[in-house]
Image 1: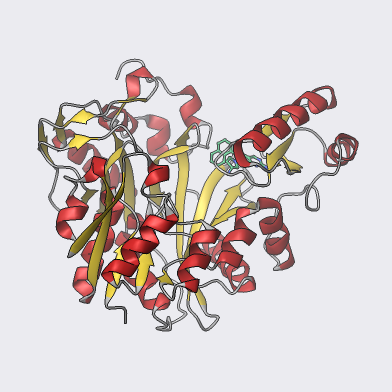
Image 2 (image 1 turned 180 degrees about the horizontal axis):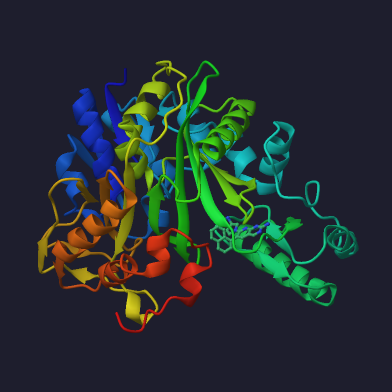
Length: 447
Ligand code: MV4
């Protein structure tokens, strides 16, 4: 087992990782930018190293600074958390070259899944259902138009280097094709330095459902069921839940097996997520694979009773998994509490937290790095807490979540709490019958 892990991240996920390391008897090293010198991850870790100024590029994204911190402190592994360097192939490779275990995917796997057209081809070959579309990248507008005519409009063109909605265009008829093609090419070239595009049939009003998987170093992969992430605004997830209101054990088994087949095809080691779109007929299609721990991992922990960070560390250390799959035993939901004003287009609201009271009680978990007197820096993402609620039924989760949200008291900054309170009482949300378009028509004005 590792003796010392450096956590190449900040905020709640850095704390989350430190907590598991402490339970496992592993020493921890925090790294921090000057903006985070008063952060809890710095105080909770056994050692800490300042790695640069507030700008992420010069601190949390600086590979030389982080490798130096690991060398100086003699860390034998690095946990990247999510975001920052967690899906950076170069960083994974450099860690390997330095003999530091990267707790995440190999450079090859990151590259293969990071290129969305390649990821899709790989999954298709492994027998995972994919959305009908181009084989690999589109070679020309003409080829795209011809394919679209065959498949039938609407179609969607996506940046192969994209993800999270950037460089993507929906095309509803041939007359729009050329302009959309030019726009998507321009946008993806500028954003990713790669303007490769692929095409697929556009699935109207899907659900976004992802399967949590864990693979070990011996080719074994298991799944820990799904998370329904359909409640998003502009590709930002706000609420996630498990089990999904639209899945049954039959579909859960088939999606779980598809996710396992995909992960096994690339010899996947560690925790990962296979994202699917589920259409109105309950048909599912591979969308993307994330080769990292995700923000919403706690709801899976709550319903399967696994510590996913511990699983990541164990498989990275060469410990085999049982290979058993896990189905949810209870119901769990996460609300992302962001320092944003939901009534003003979710505009960031950084600043000092004057006073704070966190909710508690049965079935309530809060993963957060903030405290009364803490100043939220403007340099990083605005998530300040994850409120995770678990109960025996979905109805109980909704009631308990509303109660916990009402108990949550933050003075000094605006938060997404009022939005969540309203959502918990929304009839359509309560019914479980909603799609990824749900928030497009939600009324945010009275929050
Ligand atoms: C799609 C789609 C419909 N049809 N692909 C959005 C982000 C990126 N991961 C892929 N996305 C989508 N791909 C086809 N063929 C609809 C979306 C989409 C979406 C997906 C999941 C969650 C929220 C979404 C919001 C808008 C569009």
